[in-house]
Length: 589
Image (tube, rainbow, N blue to C red):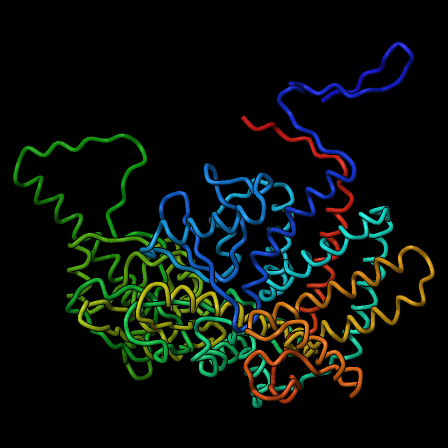
């Protein structure tokens, strides 16, 4: 594209290969963008809440993904979302459901789906980034934020058709979002908890897990998530490092067997089957250097023409191995002169990032020094943090103060498949923990990992800011009423946009009621009337048929920062979409 001027000095745009491009301007471009955003929101709308539906999608390599947070970003050659109507998208989903029955890689998390798939449409990319931003910052609420953005776009389309300028709509939305943001502060309440009283945190995490496949074990999983977060949290600074929580899974057993280990779990076993399987008061040498003879950096050639030379070479290698093992096992001896006692303070377990050959393995076993090989770099770092040890790159640097300490290291077998894992427990520094998930199949393991990630993020958010609002759509209804009331104080054109924002906030409770099999309009009207009559902002949609609309009685909570982030992010993305008035794209072939 280039800018040129005619004979009279009037500018005009030259488009390269103009005949091969399509261009939308003004209201048509805005309507096309809004339609794409609404299509994304409609697909996600049915997935909202504890009774939300799941989706199925086939990836380009033939795998199948089952998800409750499916974003329509299908890879070519299947579709481009800007070329499909809503009906076509539904037909495409039906095609996926009918075409592929075997499920190879199921998932239930929006962020996972987004990582696996490509996005073709520019507005779909904005909606995808919206969901991803919510996931990165809060960890929960990725479906709700897209549904809210879709509702705002739907209301904006009506305002544009009435002739209101998109900038005025965007300004009205910004005013309304500030009103809703401040109202959420007013209706929130502090949720007091401590390291001794974790029940409030557990209740909040249970709300998050209610909409997952693992909801039947939500009490146990919520307790595990909260204990894991508190184990690595710094409550004084209100800071949580989730990198210190390792989530490991093993197919077999049942979901109820999931456990929290105050230490590190490594999916490895001892390098030799005759090495001890249980080591108490272990002193661990953490090595990143291999157990093998040194290799010259330059090209070399060794000629062996006699038995004596071969024997000499073999003895040299054996001597080198002996020295390495000796450095690990008795790397420093304290000689107590007064009592004439030789005290061994060397390593009792070697964890190596690299492998070692059979001869080194044989020597380690005979020298009674258990070893674990091929341990990943991330796991080595966690082991070093948990045990208080140092990662040693060379044998010459090994010393007693660089050894990690653990009260118990044990190897555990699972089932009849001879799968073994290494437990490192009772560590010197317990600020690194592992959640070990069991399940009947890979789908359940992966889904539980993603569900626990959401629960961990919610617990972390509450430690950072312990303010909560009540769920079930009660916060959205309360904000809708507050925004509707505040609209009367704005005499300009923005008043229409503020009222439309209030209507858009009702989309979340409407979707919750619809997905729960309730009459949506009647249910929303009744709950709204109850909130106004009782001045109770805790009334929401009774999705689980408990018998009361009071979310406080049902113990359904959401974090305040998560809800505020939803409103702010959705408003920002909608403003961005409304400001696009010219779309140039390649034409269809």
